[in-house]
Length: 380
Image (cartoon, rainbow, N blue to C red; front, side):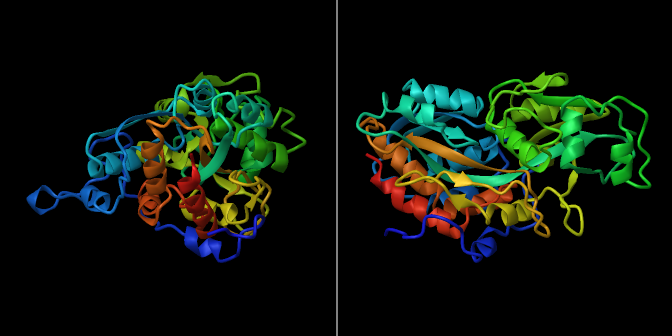
């Protein structure tokens, strides 16, 4: 099936994105996160796995990239391997930049990236994708949470300008007038802010930069396309898990990571003053409202999206990302192609998208998911 409209998502996509408010996972990476014991040793995970079509999948499939999608990938891999005997999906959460590098060096069958391929990266991919190129296939969405640890402050509100100044080392105290104005009545301490950022190349960093460059252009003068942290000051940690751990352990800290890391580590998150009637909390449902306004900017088999980081829509959380699985449209290795297609067919299926809600992610808009489902079978 070919969908004729390439730009703009129907308003009905918002309904498809609304996610249940209860988050099931209490810790990331646990072997028991996705399973509920049942009689005779059955689990909800194995029940879901029974609907997966293995379609000739065999052997090992190597992939690497985005750490933002790691918790979702853990669920997908667990379910797929339970259904497809003898298959091993090895996904390394090394950051979007590292994943793209490995993909363009031919070391992995697909890469996870929280930002679409740049033109030069597409050109580089043509050396590996014989007769084709790397394409961006949206697979999972969600909010980038601004997590913090500040004793006595449970409902911190910031806007784009204060976030930019904090991460650019221009606001250094928690009781700074700009923060106090947004949080009347809060007991803000006269203590130094410990800001943490990613040490590795990251699509999460890039998406945060795009948000700050759009919503706080006067205060964030750095390159919004950079996957590397561009500002001076602050402390670095590796991966979303590293930043989350650092924030969890340090009083007076602040950092950014995908929402599931905040949930798993019980980290408080900032609500964003976007100019709407009320500050917007970081949640899957609120991120969904922002992602639903995305437009497809890619052509052909490429489904790169354009996000509206400056949204002021009521209840729309603006700091969002969409993680792409990047694969060759043509020129994939014959020995891994069946496994690649079977696995991606599962992740974008209704069954695969449903598990995202339990992990704190936002499933794809129905229309975008339908487009991805038509493209995956055509990979060759």
